[in-house]
Structure formats: structure tokens, C-alpha cells
Length: 122
Length: 220
Image 1 (spheres, each protein chain N blue to C red):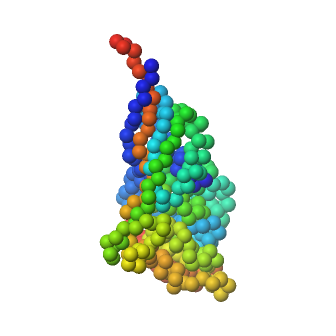
Image 2: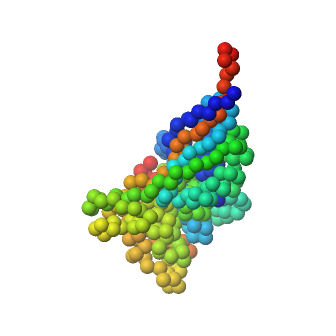
Image 3: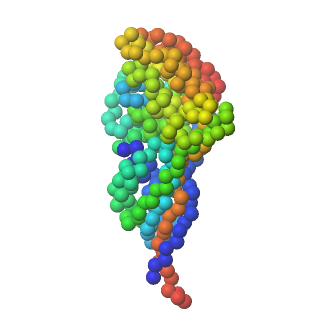
């Protein structure tokens, strides 16, 4: 259910962009999904494939997801580490003075839009 | 003939909502209205706590309530009956959260001239934390029976909330809830958060919570 809400948001945005650009349809969407974004990619894909049928331009669109690794920075020792393995506590020095550098994003990277090409001279 | 073009976006899914939320927050500040987004799990005692809080504040401030649920108007009716303040129900239509657009719509329905509005978000610790509603205050309620480890399991909602209320403290004798550990977990997520432990049922420590809101309203 959580994934579905975000999917609805994505398809609405992409549908609008397709319409604004005068595209005929959208063939593909590439998204960057952070490892610690709380999105489960399998559920996200299922929700996408269900929801796209209800759109104007995305009926045949394929979704590609690029998973972005979660990395955390430690303020105490300046090292970075993999978030999913160690969480909030730095494995190098044990400090909890850390913050997430990357890995929480949910980004629409690009879309492949199909256009009707004008006839030569037309 | 067809031609395929790639349109580069690199656009966060939450970008549109974040912009709408920021605009709404600006509008609210101009009007001098304090909008409190109340987040928690289902069954944390949100409605009971709000009723107690509103009854303590309603003599001095004009208050409104927006109840968000997937369906039913039970909470809006309960709050209206027990407090007498203006209360409306928002239906999210199957969605697990409210966004800034839905919030703006609800505010329109509720009308102008209010000092304090509580927005009771859908009972859920995950999705409401991701969608900025445009509220001027984010608040999370954690009830004693849920356990003191929730800030570890659902970090985002605690990171985004300037007020964390630990509710149902009257049940402390029956659960192994470590209050100090819970406070530490919340502070580790958000060092600046206010943490206030109360029982709306017995009224224990409600004064501190009421004072917090009076201070907040005076800062508008």
C-alpha cells in the first residue's frame, strides 16, 4: 500500500510530462531508488504494473529501477560506511554522530517518450 | 514513423509535494494559524489525547480538527461530540498518507480564523513521515504498549517530528517499557525534539503538554 501511493504519484507526474511534451506514449521510465528509502522494489514494480493500465500514456511503459546503495558519514572519524550493514553506529569508531549521505532518494531519472515523426517536408 | 527520445528529469518524486507544502506553510504563517500534523500507529490513543488537549485549550484559542482516515467518519464524530470544536473528516481514498494538496483542500473546508488546527494523519508510522503535509508543527505519538524500540524501527517519523509524545503512561506497570532508553532513542534521531510522557486517561503530566502548545501558539 505504501509503494502504491508513491507509484500513483510517479505515474501522474510522468503522464503530465508526456502530455506537456506532446509525446504519443511512454516506452520506459528509469528511476533511482535508495536502499534505505523504505521502498521494496518488488512491490513497487507490482504496483507500477497494476497502476500503469489506468493511465493515458504509460500503458506499455517498462519500469527500470537503479538501486542506490545507502552510505552513512561519521562526523567523529570522517569515515563512510554501508548503512544497511551498520545502521546509525559507525563501525570504524563506534560513534553515533552520523548522518546519511545517500540512499534515501526516490528519483525519476529519465523517461523514454515515443513521438510521431513528421513526414519529410510535412 | 515513430521516434523515441529520452527526456532527462532527475526529479525527486516528492519534489512537487514538497513545493506545495512549503507554499501552504507560508500561507498558514501569514494567517497566524498553527497546523499540527499528528502522526502515530493505529491505536496509539491519538483521538483520546487530542480530545484531552483540545478541552484544555479551547477556552483560550479557536481550534479545528481534520481527521484523516482511509474510510469512515468515526474519529471526526468522536472529536466533535467530546470537544464541541469544528471537526471534519478527510478520506484518503485508500492511500496510506495525506499530502499537501489534500491538506489544503481540508483547510478550505474547515474555514478561516482558527488559531490551532490538529491534522490527525492516517495511523501509520511509515508513509505519513515521507509526505510533507505543509503543517507548521510535526508531532508523533508513541504509546507505552507499542514498546520503547519504535524510534529505532521507524526512524524517519521521529527525525521529522519536533514533538514526541509518549502516551498511555498509566499502563507502564504492565509493560516492560524503558522510558530512559526510549528518550535516548528519540534524541539520537532528533536531538532537538521535545519528549513529553503523558496519560490522557488519568491526566498525568498533561499540563506540560498543554504548556508546550501554548508556547508554540504564542510563537506564531
